[in-house]
Length: 353
Image (tube, rainbow, N blue to C red; front, top):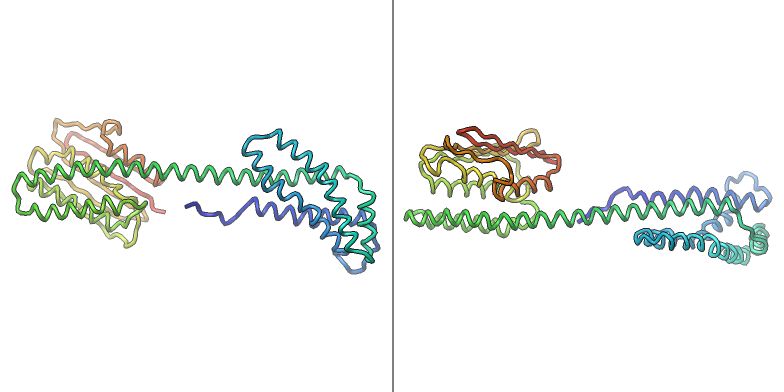
Protein backbone atom coordinates (compact mmCIF):
# COMPACT_ATOMS: atom_id res chain seq x y z
CA UNK A 1 0.00 0.00 0.00
CA UNK A 2 1.31 3.42 -0.93
CA UNK A 3 1.82 5.86 1.88
CA UNK A 4 0.46 9.33 1.39
CA UNK A 5 3.19 11.96 1.55
CA UNK A 6 3.12 14.25 4.56
CA UNK A 7 3.95 17.28 2.41
CA UNK A 8 1.46 17.65 -0.45
CA UNK A 9 3.15 20.20 -2.70
CA UNK A 10 0.24 20.77 -5.17
CA UNK A 11 -2.18 21.47 -2.32
CA UNK A 12 0.23 23.81 -0.54
CA UNK A 13 0.98 25.58 -3.82
CA UNK A 14 -2.74 25.95 -4.53
CA UNK A 15 -3.40 27.42 -1.07
CA UNK A 16 -0.54 29.88 -1.53
CA UNK A 17 -1.99 31.05 -4.86
CA UNK A 18 -5.37 31.63 -3.25
CA UNK A 19 -3.89 33.40 -0.24
CA UNK A 20 -1.24 35.57 -1.90
CA UNK A 21 -2.77 36.15 -5.29
CA UNK A 22 -6.54 36.04 -4.82
CA UNK A 23 -6.90 37.24 -1.23
CA UNK A 24 -4.06 39.76 -1.32
CA UNK A 25 -3.17 40.87 -4.84
CA UNK A 26 -6.61 40.79 -6.42
CA UNK A 27 -8.17 42.33 -3.33
CA UNK A 28 -5.63 45.16 -3.51
CA UNK A 29 -6.19 45.53 -7.25
CA UNK A 30 -10.00 45.82 -6.93
CA UNK A 31 -9.60 48.14 -3.93
CA UNK A 32 -7.53 50.52 -6.05
CA UNK A 33 -10.09 50.34 -8.83
CA UNK A 34 -12.98 51.11 -6.45
CA UNK A 35 -11.50 54.48 -5.24
CA UNK A 36 -13.59 54.32 -2.08
CA UNK A 37 -13.18 56.66 0.93
CA UNK A 38 -10.31 55.73 3.19
CA UNK A 39 -11.08 54.15 6.56
CA UNK A 40 -8.65 55.36 9.25
CA UNK A 41 -6.65 52.75 11.19
CA UNK A 42 -7.85 49.90 8.97
CA UNK A 43 -5.30 47.66 7.21
CA UNK A 44 -7.99 45.68 5.40
CA UNK A 45 -10.90 47.98 4.61
CA UNK A 46 -13.97 46.86 2.69
CA UNK A 47 -13.56 43.13 3.15
CA UNK A 48 -16.57 42.65 0.87
CA UNK A 49 -14.16 43.29 -1.99
CA UNK A 50 -11.84 40.53 -0.73
CA UNK A 51 -14.84 38.18 -0.56
CA UNK A 52 -15.75 39.20 -4.11
CA UNK A 53 -12.18 38.37 -5.27
CA UNK A 54 -12.56 34.88 -3.83
CA UNK A 55 -16.10 34.21 -5.05
CA UNK A 56 -15.43 35.50 -8.55
CA UNK A 57 -12.54 33.02 -8.89
CA UNK A 58 -14.26 29.86 -7.62
CA UNK A 59 -15.40 28.96 -11.12
CA UNK A 60 -11.78 28.11 -12.03
CA UNK A 61 -11.57 25.19 -9.56
CA UNK A 62 -13.00 22.56 -11.99
CA UNK A 63 -10.66 23.86 -14.70
CA UNK A 64 -7.33 23.54 -12.86
CA UNK A 65 -8.23 20.61 -10.60
CA UNK A 66 -9.84 18.20 -13.08
CA UNK A 67 -10.19 19.42 -16.66
CA UNK A 68 -6.59 20.56 -17.34
CA UNK A 69 -4.85 17.58 -15.61
CA UNK A 70 -7.20 15.13 -17.41
CA UNK A 71 -6.45 16.68 -20.82
CA UNK A 72 -2.72 16.66 -20.07
CA UNK A 73 -2.92 12.99 -19.11
CA UNK A 74 -4.62 12.15 -22.40
CA UNK A 75 -2.21 14.43 -24.31
CA UNK A 76 -5.11 16.45 -25.73
CA UNK A 77 -3.07 19.64 -25.93
CA UNK A 78 -5.25 21.33 -28.53
CA UNK A 79 -8.33 20.71 -26.40
CA UNK A 80 -6.45 22.13 -23.41
CA UNK A 81 -5.57 25.24 -25.39
CA UNK A 82 -9.18 25.63 -26.51
CA UNK A 83 -10.52 25.07 -22.99
CA UNK A 84 -8.06 27.63 -21.61
CA UNK A 85 -9.06 30.27 -24.17
CA UNK A 86 -12.78 29.72 -23.60
CA UNK A 87 -12.42 29.66 -19.81
CA UNK A 88 -10.39 32.85 -19.51
CA UNK A 89 -12.36 34.85 -22.08
CA UNK A 90 -16.04 33.99 -22.38
CA UNK A 91 -16.57 32.17 -19.06
CA UNK A 92 -14.50 34.69 -17.10
CA UNK A 93 -16.35 37.62 -18.70
CA UNK A 94 -19.82 36.41 -17.78
CA UNK A 95 -18.73 35.08 -14.40
CA UNK A 96 -17.43 38.53 -13.33
CA UNK A 97 -20.63 40.24 -14.52
CA UNK A 98 -22.87 37.75 -12.69
CA UNK A 99 -20.82 37.92 -9.47
CA UNK A 100 -20.74 41.77 -9.62
CA UNK A 101 -24.55 41.81 -10.03
CA UNK A 102 -24.99 39.46 -7.04
CA UNK A 103 -22.69 41.53 -4.83
CA UNK A 104 -24.43 44.74 -5.94
CA UNK A 105 -27.75 43.24 -4.84
CA UNK A 106 -26.33 42.05 -1.51
CA UNK A 107 -24.58 45.34 -0.63
CA UNK A 108 -27.41 47.76 -1.25
CA UNK A 109 -27.05 50.78 1.01
CA UNK A 110 -23.32 50.17 1.67
CA UNK A 111 -20.44 52.26 0.36
CA UNK A 112 -19.11 49.37 -1.74
CA UNK A 113 -22.46 49.07 -3.57
CA UNK A 114 -21.43 51.72 -6.10
CA UNK A 115 -18.25 49.77 -6.94
CA UNK A 116 -20.05 46.49 -7.63
CA UNK A 117 -22.75 48.31 -9.58
CA UNK A 118 -20.18 50.06 -11.77
CA UNK A 119 -18.33 46.79 -12.24
CA UNK A 120 -21.53 45.16 -13.41
CA UNK A 121 -22.53 47.98 -15.73
CA UNK A 122 -19.14 49.00 -17.13
CA UNK A 123 -16.95 45.89 -16.94
CA UNK A 124 -13.77 46.11 -19.02
CA UNK A 125 -11.14 43.46 -19.60
CA UNK A 126 -7.89 43.84 -17.67
CA UNK A 127 -5.25 42.06 -19.74
CA UNK A 128 -2.69 42.08 -16.92
CA UNK A 129 -5.06 40.43 -14.45
CA UNK A 130 -6.26 37.96 -17.08
CA UNK A 131 -2.71 36.97 -17.98
CA UNK A 132 -1.76 36.47 -14.33
CA UNK A 133 -4.89 34.35 -13.87
CA UNK A 134 -3.84 32.11 -16.75
CA UNK A 135 -0.26 31.73 -15.50
CA UNK A 136 -1.22 31.14 -11.86
CA UNK A 137 -3.92 28.56 -12.43
CA UNK A 138 -2.13 26.77 -15.25
CA UNK A 139 0.80 26.40 -12.87
CA UNK A 140 -1.52 24.77 -10.32
CA UNK A 141 -2.89 22.47 -13.04
CA UNK A 142 0.62 21.43 -14.11
CA UNK A 143 1.65 20.87 -10.48
CA UNK A 144 -1.36 18.63 -9.90
CA UNK A 145 -0.74 16.73 -13.13
CA UNK A 146 2.92 16.22 -12.23
CA UNK A 147 2.05 14.95 -8.74
CA UNK A 148 -0.65 12.61 -10.10
CA UNK A 149 1.76 11.26 -12.71
CA UNK A 150 4.37 10.59 -10.04
CA UNK A 151 1.85 8.77 -7.83
CA UNK A 152 0.68 6.75 -10.84
CA UNK A 153 4.25 5.87 -11.81
CA UNK A 154 5.06 4.87 -8.23
CA UNK A 155 1.94 2.70 -8.05
CA UNK A 156 2.88 0.93 -11.29
CA UNK A 157 6.43 0.34 -10.04
CA UNK A 158 5.13 -0.99 -6.73
CA UNK A 159 2.68 -3.35 -8.44
CA UNK A 160 5.46 -4.53 -10.74
CA UNK A 161 7.75 -5.04 -7.75
CA UNK A 162 5.13 -7.13 -5.94
CA UNK A 163 4.59 -9.22 -9.06
CA UNK A 164 8.31 -9.85 -9.44
CA UNK A 165 8.70 -10.85 -5.79
CA UNK A 166 5.72 -13.19 -6.02
CA UNK A 167 7.17 -14.84 -9.12
CA UNK A 168 10.57 -15.24 -7.50
CA UNK A 169 9.11 -16.86 -4.38
CA UNK A 170 6.92 -19.13 -6.50
CA UNK A 171 10.01 -20.13 -8.45
CA UNK A 172 11.99 -20.88 -5.30
CA UNK A 173 9.42 -23.07 -3.51
CA UNK A 174 9.28 -25.97 -6.03
CA UNK A 175 13.08 -25.88 -6.24
CA UNK A 176 13.36 -26.40 -2.48
CA UNK A 177 10.68 -29.11 -2.49
CA UNK A 178 12.55 -31.02 -5.21
CA UNK A 179 15.82 -30.95 -3.24
CA UNK A 180 14.34 -31.90 0.13
CA UNK A 181 12.28 -34.76 -1.30
CA UNK A 182 15.48 -36.16 -2.81
CA UNK A 183 17.07 -35.95 0.62
CA UNK A 184 14.13 -37.70 2.26
CA UNK A 185 14.33 -40.44 -0.37
CA UNK A 186 17.96 -41.02 0.57
CA UNK A 187 17.05 -41.33 4.27
CA UNK A 188 14.35 -43.87 3.51
CA UNK A 189 16.79 -46.00 1.46
CA UNK A 190 19.18 -46.10 4.40
CA UNK A 191 16.49 -47.50 6.70
CA UNK A 192 17.31 -44.98 9.42
CA UNK A 193 15.20 -45.24 12.58
CA UNK A 194 15.16 -41.45 12.67
CA UNK A 195 13.30 -41.29 9.36
CA UNK A 196 9.86 -40.59 10.99
CA UNK A 197 11.33 -37.70 12.99
CA UNK A 198 12.91 -36.21 9.89
CA UNK A 199 9.67 -36.65 7.96
CA UNK A 200 8.00 -34.59 10.69
CA UNK A 201 10.82 -32.01 10.50
CA UNK A 202 10.44 -31.85 6.73
CA UNK A 203 6.68 -31.44 7.14
CA UNK A 204 7.23 -28.47 9.45
CA UNK A 205 9.69 -26.94 7.02
CA UNK A 206 7.27 -27.39 4.13
CA UNK A 207 4.51 -25.77 6.18
CA UNK A 208 6.80 -22.81 6.74
CA UNK A 209 7.80 -22.43 3.11
CA UNK A 210 4.30 -22.93 1.68
CA UNK A 211 2.27 -20.88 4.15
CA UNK A 212 4.40 -18.62 6.36
CA UNK A 213 6.51 -17.44 3.42
CA UNK A 214 3.50 -16.04 1.56
CA UNK A 215 3.99 -12.75 3.40
CA UNK A 216 6.42 -10.10 2.25
CA UNK A 217 8.60 -10.53 5.33
CA UNK A 218 9.07 -13.09 8.10
CA UNK A 219 10.53 -13.05 11.57
CA UNK A 220 14.29 -13.66 11.52
CA UNK A 221 13.87 -16.22 14.33
CA UNK A 222 11.51 -18.30 12.17
CA UNK A 223 13.96 -18.15 9.27
CA UNK A 224 16.78 -19.30 11.56
CA UNK A 225 14.66 -22.24 12.80
CA UNK A 226 13.99 -23.24 9.20
CA UNK A 227 17.69 -23.09 8.27
CA UNK A 228 18.66 -25.14 11.34
CA UNK A 229 16.20 -27.80 10.23
CA UNK A 230 17.73 -27.77 6.76
CA UNK A 231 21.25 -28.20 8.16
CA UNK A 232 20.05 -31.00 10.44
CA UNK A 233 18.57 -32.88 7.46
CA UNK A 234 21.83 -32.52 5.54
CA UNK A 235 23.87 -33.70 8.51
CA UNK A 236 21.69 -36.81 8.72
CA UNK A 237 22.28 -37.51 5.00
CA UNK A 238 26.07 -37.10 5.41
CA UNK A 239 26.93 -38.17 8.99
CA UNK A 240 30.70 -38.10 8.40
CA UNK A 241 30.71 -34.51 7.24
CA UNK A 242 31.28 -31.48 9.48
CA UNK A 243 28.08 -29.48 8.91
CA UNK A 244 27.37 -26.52 11.18
CA UNK A 245 25.18 -23.45 11.39
CA UNK A 246 25.88 -20.83 14.06
CA UNK A 247 24.09 -17.63 14.97
CA UNK A 248 25.29 -14.66 16.93
CA UNK A 249 23.14 -12.50 19.19
CA UNK A 250 20.13 -11.65 17.05
CA UNK A 251 17.39 -9.26 18.19
CA UNK A 252 13.80 -10.41 18.52
CA UNK A 253 11.27 -9.17 16.03
CA UNK A 254 13.68 -8.42 13.18
CA UNK A 255 11.93 -8.89 9.83
CA UNK A 256 13.60 -10.10 6.64
CA UNK A 257 12.37 -11.37 3.24
CA UNK A 258 11.51 -15.09 3.42
CA UNK A 259 13.99 -17.71 2.19
CA UNK A 260 16.55 -15.07 1.32
CA UNK A 261 19.56 -17.18 2.38
CA UNK A 262 18.26 -20.49 1.05
CA UNK A 263 19.84 -20.25 -2.45
CA UNK A 264 23.29 -19.74 -0.92
CA UNK A 265 22.76 -22.71 1.41
CA UNK A 266 21.53 -24.96 -1.40
CA UNK A 267 24.43 -23.90 -3.59
CA UNK A 268 26.96 -24.94 -0.93
CA UNK A 269 25.36 -28.31 -0.36
CA UNK A 270 24.99 -28.89 -4.09
CA UNK A 271 28.69 -28.38 -4.88
CA UNK A 272 30.22 -29.44 -1.56
CA UNK A 273 32.99 -32.03 -1.23
CA UNK A 274 31.00 -33.82 1.51
CA UNK A 275 28.84 -35.52 -1.13
CA UNK A 276 31.82 -37.53 -2.40
CA UNK A 277 34.35 -37.58 0.45
CA UNK A 278 34.29 -37.89 4.24
CA UNK A 279 35.56 -35.26 6.68
CA UNK A 280 34.45 -32.40 4.44
CA UNK A 281 33.05 -29.23 5.90
CA UNK A 282 30.03 -26.97 5.30
CA UNK A 283 29.88 -24.07 7.76
CA UNK A 284 27.49 -21.13 7.99
CA UNK A 285 27.11 -18.24 10.38
CA UNK A 286 24.49 -15.50 10.76
CA UNK A 287 25.34 -12.41 12.81
CA UNK A 288 24.40 -8.78 13.32
CA UNK A 289 27.07 -6.09 13.48
CA UNK A 290 26.46 -2.31 13.47
CA UNK A 291 22.97 -2.64 12.01
CA UNK A 292 24.35 -4.91 9.30
CA UNK A 293 23.06 -8.47 8.98
CA UNK A 294 25.85 -10.77 7.79
CA UNK A 295 25.36 -14.30 6.45
CA UNK A 296 28.48 -16.33 5.72
CA UNK A 297 28.69 -19.84 4.33
CA UNK A 298 31.58 -21.92 2.98
CA UNK A 299 32.13 -25.48 1.80
CA UNK A 300 35.07 -27.64 0.86
CA UNK A 301 35.51 -28.49 -2.81
CA UNK A 302 37.19 -31.40 -4.50
CA UNK A 303 40.50 -30.23 -5.90
CA UNK A 304 39.47 -31.07 -9.47
CA UNK A 305 36.06 -29.39 -9.20
CA UNK A 306 35.50 -25.85 -10.36
CA UNK A 307 32.09 -24.18 -9.96
CA UNK A 308 31.45 -21.10 -12.04
CA UNK A 309 30.42 -18.08 -10.03
CA UNK A 310 28.52 -16.48 -12.90
CA UNK A 311 24.79 -16.30 -12.18
CA UNK A 312 23.70 -17.81 -15.51
CA UNK A 313 25.64 -21.01 -14.81
CA UNK A 314 24.59 -21.31 -11.16
CA UNK A 315 21.03 -22.49 -11.68
CA UNK A 316 18.00 -20.56 -10.52
CA UNK A 317 19.37 -20.13 -6.99
CA UNK A 318 21.93 -17.35 -7.40
CA UNK A 319 19.93 -15.68 -10.17
CA UNK A 320 16.96 -15.65 -7.80
CA UNK A 321 18.82 -14.18 -4.84
CA UNK A 322 20.44 -11.45 -6.94
CA UNK A 323 17.08 -10.32 -8.27
CA UNK A 324 15.49 -10.37 -4.84
CA UNK A 325 18.36 -8.41 -3.32
CA UNK A 326 17.99 -5.73 -6.00
CA UNK A 327 14.27 -5.51 -5.22
CA UNK A 328 14.36 -5.68 -1.42
CA UNK A 329 17.69 -3.97 -0.67
CA UNK A 330 18.58 -1.63 -3.55
CA UNK A 331 22.04 -0.14 -2.90
CA UNK A 332 21.96 -1.67 0.60
CA UNK A 333 23.45 -5.11 0.01
CA UNK A 334 26.70 -6.76 -0.95
CA UNK A 335 27.02 -10.36 -2.15
CA UNK A 336 30.60 -11.63 -2.27
CA UNK A 337 31.40 -15.00 -3.84
CA UNK A 338 34.92 -16.43 -3.55
CA UNK A 339 36.35 -19.68 -4.84
CA UNK A 340 39.71 -21.40 -4.68
CA UNK A 341 40.70 -24.90 -5.74
CA UNK A 342 39.52 -26.34 -2.42
CA UNK A 343 37.07 -23.83 -0.90
CA UNK A 344 33.91 -22.03 -1.97
CA UNK A 345 32.48 -19.21 0.16
CA UNK A 346 29.68 -16.69 0.01
CA UNK A 347 29.15 -13.63 2.19
CA UNK A 348 25.97 -11.58 2.12
CA UNK A 349 25.87 -8.20 3.88
CA UNK A 350 22.51 -6.51 4.35
CA UNK A 351 22.30 -2.94 5.57
CA UNK A 352 19.16 -2.77 7.69
CA UNK A 353 16.98 0.32 7.50
